[in-house]
Amino acid sequence: MNAPNLNSNLASISARWIQNFDRCLLHRKSAIVYGNIHDRFLWRSGYQDIHGFLEAYGQDMGYEIVMRYDPIDGLNFATPDMCDRYESLVRDRLANRFGHQAPAPTPAPIANPN
Image (cartoon, rainbow, N blue to C red; front, side, top):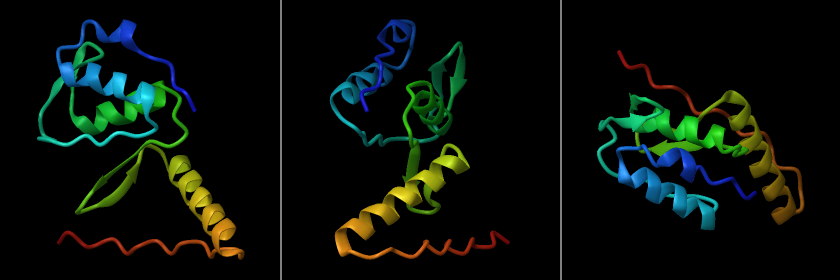
């Protein structure tokens, strides 16, 4: 899926990496963003953290699935529907690859933070 470019909206962005990120996604289907995830930066006339930015950006661009990964929580999706879509795509890919219907994934248990 080719996403539209938001360059016209990026001119007033204070973080240069967002402009680079936008350009990168014109040529690729995915991107890896790394660095200090606690930094805040200007986006949409307000300060955002990386998680809020990635979810809003992906949805604004019309991506079918917007997800992020971290070693503690694993995969996180912008919406529950995106998680369902991802799981459906994985099941379909496994079924095509191995010639059988893959079982629905069992959710991983959530650790009790207490």
